[in-house]
Image 1: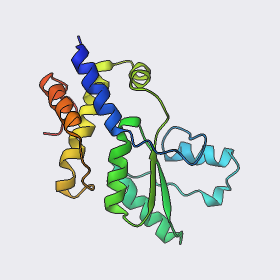
Image 2: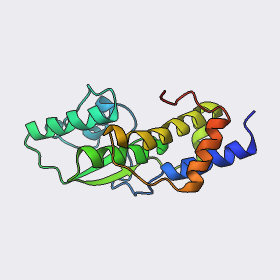
Image 3: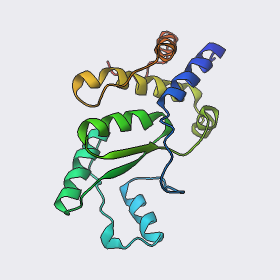
Image 4: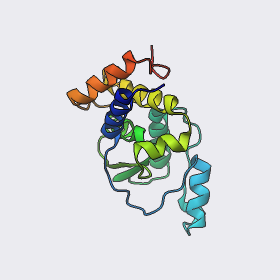
Length: 174
């Protein structure tokens, strides 16, 4: 049973993760690199203009590999659009800001409420565990050099601590 306090705390953590950036394209497809490529070509982008980076196992690798791929192709990058899960917007932004500081960044996801996202996953406990894990990474990864530090408001930190205390810990790094 998830308490009303845990739901309230999870909603607070959810809202903190959202960057509220507006995507620069109306519709973004879902899926891995190959699916993005297929959708771009479907929309009329020439196949020769689409580069994919399918090797990454995490956000940092994705940025490193994609940046190298673009440099090798001679593409001068001024801005990047990051499309992620809603609760990963802030983490993706902080990682790119650390690893590619000279680019303009928009970090966005499909607009939806916390409740809509939880309903789409169908496992409320797992969703809250993921939110808690994502916030923990925002707190610890800057010291490990993986991302820039971002302020976490006191009320969000308190909500995080209550959720951890409530047992939402399956996605925490030890």
